[in-house]
Length: 140
Image (cartoon, rainbow, N blue to C red; front, side, top):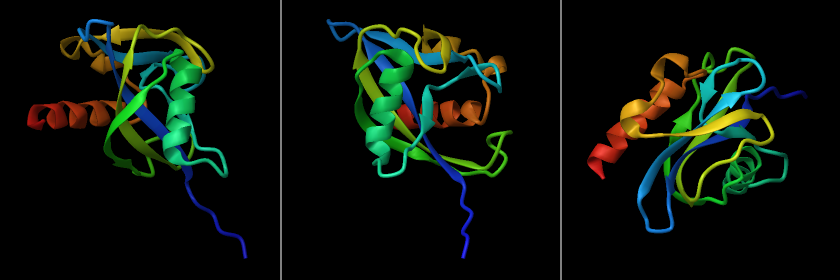
């Protein structure tokens, strides 16, 4: 019997701080691969890997940052969220100290203050995720 399931991914909203605990912004990447645009850093969970470990690995590969996961923002599973195929993403809020450096699938990384998120260039369902994040921050 063959079972087909969605691909499992993980993304993170990385809150970056300097050594003095000053908030620098959140990390967004410019994607090297299609779909092109601005996105949260993230990637696929490998077989035999915990989602939390995949998140830490993917964040380091794409941004060079070692993260600490602080909260689970949610699970995003709309079959149309990724134009390539059905992907379910477990999205975390994490923190890091330092500035990101592009690697792996990231053409470029940048820090964005919450008032300067480039809404018009976001791909996938990352606009929805970031709006959910802003609501979460208002409550906490």
